[in-house]
Amino acid sequence: MDDENGSEHCGKIIPELVLSVINFEIKAKLVKIIFDDLYKADYKFRLNLDKIIKGIHNSAVVFGQKTQNITAINDNEQPAWIIFSAQPESLPMKGKILLIIHVSPFQLKEWLLTPKVKKHQQQLVVISDPALKKLKGSERDCDTGLYTQLINPNSFGGGKALIVTSWREHNYTQSVKIFPSEDQTLYNGNHIVVYARDLPPFSFRRNLVDREVIWDGVEVRLLLLMKEILNFTLEFQHHTGKESSDTIQTLRQGNADLVVGGFTMTKELNYETSMIYPHSMDCAAFISLTSIALPKYRAVMGPFLWDVWISITLCYILAIIPIAFSAWHTLRPLIQHPSEIENMFWNILDVYHNYHGMLYWLYYSIYYVACVP
Image (cartoon, rainbow, N blue to C red; front, side, top):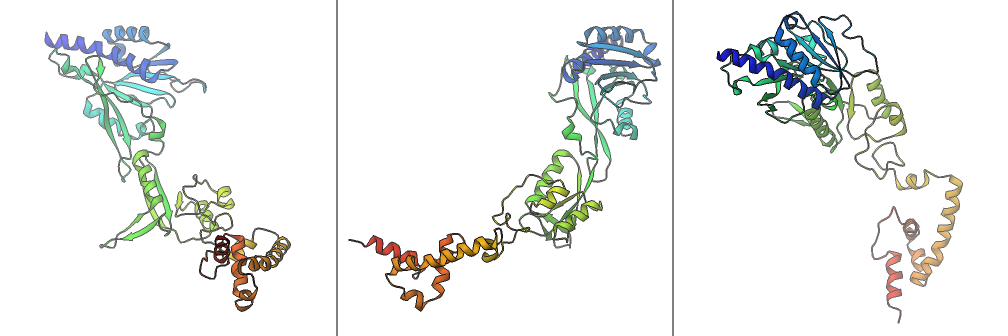
């Protein structure tokens, strides 16, 4: 008698659980229901099916058993599927799927690891039919688990079945998202090869005692953080190319998926590759293709026309005479120390020279101004 009461109680769980997932988790505009021979012959299932159809907020279409057009849906449709089956032979390719399968939890976990199920990992949630459980008539004994799968949880590229949550006493035991979001499963199962070059602090190699080489750095740690969140594996290889063309050629040949190592965002790299938003700025990046600053003469004279800079240079040199006279009231320091001409020239530019010694012309100018009675 207890078993009959338990079975009757578990029969009420499926409609309530399915409606909770469809109406509040998936929220699909169109729901399609499929069942096979095992459920078709069950009278209690027909009653549960009527409850499900009446409880769905949006429209529902019942296809029946083993329909041939299970994947024949329009591109504009984004349906949700409710499938009652003992051993489903195929699954829809579009739309989220809620599968009620008539197998034991052990068989369910084995089925979730089959190759045909892996491609549905972000759209499939499976409910083990609670009618298979041995019950004693109490509500607590009738917990129903919702299962999904996690592809590539380790570097071996395998997968594992995991339980998302359970349904107990008209509610979920854990308040979680039943279906994983696409950004969490976009890179699942991917093995990404990363070429990295030695350029601290962005990426550098560390040699351990047992001759093992590990990579570290700002960009490497950023990738490792993304690996933990997006669930993919990384393989670091040493990149010896220093020019932008070497990096582009490496990516074109398919030898690597990513290249890290403090590369400067140049027009060539930005056009030929997909670069992330720059995370640091280099003061010499606007005049150089690398992160090494040019000599001050080339840095100043390089970006402009030569005739413009000849005119500016002559004006600066001629301006040195009145400036020196106003500082020292004589031109003798310029005659005795010709190097002061270059010193004053670069101080006029006020960017590339940091000399502030006792012979600094601005030192005397400020001194005399401060001592004027």
